[in-house]
Image (cartoon, rainbow, N blue to C red; front, side, top):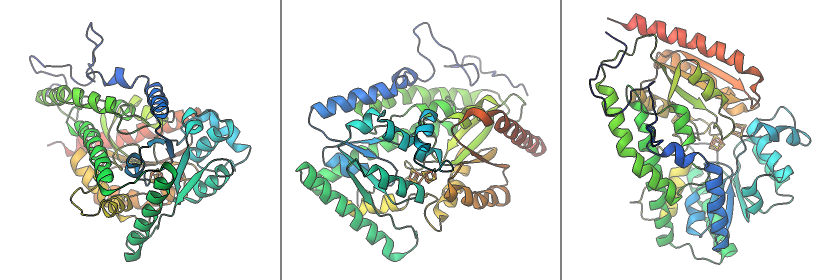
Length: 418
Ligand code: SF4
Ligand code: SF4
């Protein structure tokens, strides 16, 4: 069977033949243009919001419910650092063998070079990994910070109640600080907004389940903002999704074999968040013949898979349940991550699994052994663990390992041929 698209009149170019029209419209249906200046868009939005009297509230983890901040009239902004340039300043204070995400975030704090951090009236943090916790103490010396205590025994019957109490304390703090009453109505409205946002990003991610997805993993990673729920982003998603759905459907009509040598190897990427500026592993995968069809981490599907249940009578209960279920490696045991990986494998049909751990991230690094066992013994997929930092120095070495993984994946595809 030919590896080329044989569909006589495809509505849009197939994967690998992405083109621009004379009007500059690509197969991303405007999303590339819309997110080209993501940080600039977010900055304008945050500045306008502040002028309108809305406080900017910095968040540093997906366990922090944005809904409470939105219901208080605030703008939650993710402040996690992805910049290599911030590592050296941070290492003046922090140990060098700490995770680069923590160091980069702290480097922005020291150099006062993150405009969102500088305009934040409050930071909401959480007790997740030890490095973050101790870094927050240093940030709190000069910034207003509230730390949520996250219980970490995922199956402990008392843990959810404790987490709900922590969310209630945050609600009370926001009410007092911003002289606003966060009643159930306001909270439900915020929940409806974030659920709408999650649903749109989920639909975009689900396009990657197609045999020939209309986007690359890097595009999908780039098509989001550091501030959730901006109306302009949601409108851009709504405008682009019908066209992208059509491209995915048309591409699937192509006479096409997934086992051809030129076809990309479908990758499920799991592990640590891949922040703006720190996308090197995704780029290496996709320039080595792979396609990241599923990103299970906190900058991908992890925070999007479960909505906040709008049918639960007490919206704070609903928030507590949703956020306590987040399958982060700081939880013990973290069986929910394994369940999520099983479901995502079924849905996205990867050819292999890559588990990324930032150097110094003990929880993800240790948990990698469980992911490896799951991938190899249960899902029967080739597996690669990558431990790296934000520096480009090891890019060639990582590329070699990724290429070897892809060879194994292609050999297995060949073996599976009738
Ligand atoms: S990986 Fe865990 S600690 Fe990091 S942002 Fe996600 S939930 Fe928070
Ligand atoms: S990547 Fe790991 S070490 Fe770094 S902040 Fe997240 S959980 Fe902590």
